[in-house]
Image 1 (cartoon, one colour):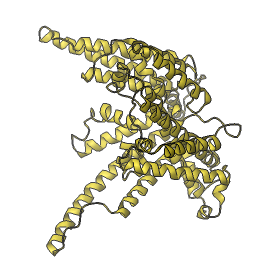
Image 2 (tube, rainbow, N blue to C red):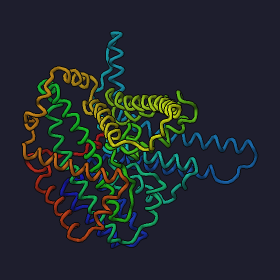
Image 3 (spheres, rainbow, N blue to C red):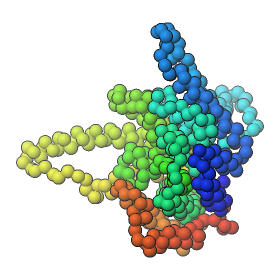
Image 4 (cartoon, one colour):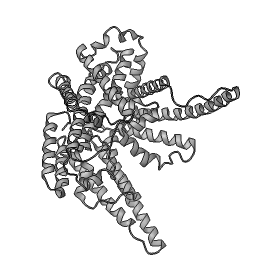
Length: 513
């Protein structure tokens, strides 16, 4: 069941109405039932994997808490208890990652093996069955493992109520594509249901509406341009590919941000606050800042559960750079079983290593220039960045990130290299001004709607980047302004949203991960 379908727009009000009609003590059971029903709409068989992941991590969490409780008698008994605890923890981690690895990387591993075998002229391994990747498996696996690590570290209690824990893993708004919630946030909220709040209702509905606008008006329309060019890179060379790649940067942002916004709005209506997953990332002035603002739940997960345990930045610059490259390479592999995804992750890691080196050099130069100015008698300049410098850094970061997105969108390294070659095949910069961009599958009036919608997105994100809660600010305005704004979004979605016979129903990009 997709968020951008009439089925979901009927499903959500029904769930919310019944949720508030039920006694608080049993509300979580209702949410669990509806979450499993929601997930089974893709494939009922997927529920067995979700249940298995839930059961394994629940049992392991209980065992870890029991092994960590109390004082063991004697040093030898204490050592054996700690050893059992570590083995239990390691076994559950390996088991869950093994299931994820099989469904996500087995065929990728077979293809790598066959390439190696072909080099030494040995018969290739045949695998006749395609392994379908269960929707959302990467997200709920990481969420469950995060809970397990928190219990092992003693950061949170082990949930005793299995049904409540099952809801934590399967909560339908964020089950399929995040945000990847922490147990200290979501699990605690599920144990303390909130009363109905009109403020939560109206803000939640506004978030759902804005998320649909991002997905159906911007992302799905930009997808037409991107698909037109990337599916025929030989026919659309040069600046066509550059433009399509920039549009893909907008497409994937609005697609994933739209999903996260709808998820947050859906949960908020029921009094549950999910974490913010995007914070105006394209206004970032460095790639490092970009990754603090993009897919925040995943970046935070890798930081807390991989980067810091590897040593973080505590063991010297070389170790820090190695840890960065490791984390982003793993992040690339998490996104997909392909050398293109692997390179995409590694490239983002390289960006940050280079930025770190340039930053240190810049600080050294700035300090020596300051001392030279003092020797020459010049007064010290006022601290603070210049507007032109901020714009340059923002544009530079956007272009670097967009270049990396090319490998993400290509889907394979061979196709990515072919597309890169076609960029330099023809110097056709004139297409930027002669109206050729209106011939990429989107009619002129539709292209104008897309550009105007993107302008609205940039304005909203600018205020968000400056630290303002745009939704709260909107809801504090007069009733006429609120009604006009909501009606505007609603009409734009109904009139210009990508649905109906002219468009294929576009699922969210991150469903494939």
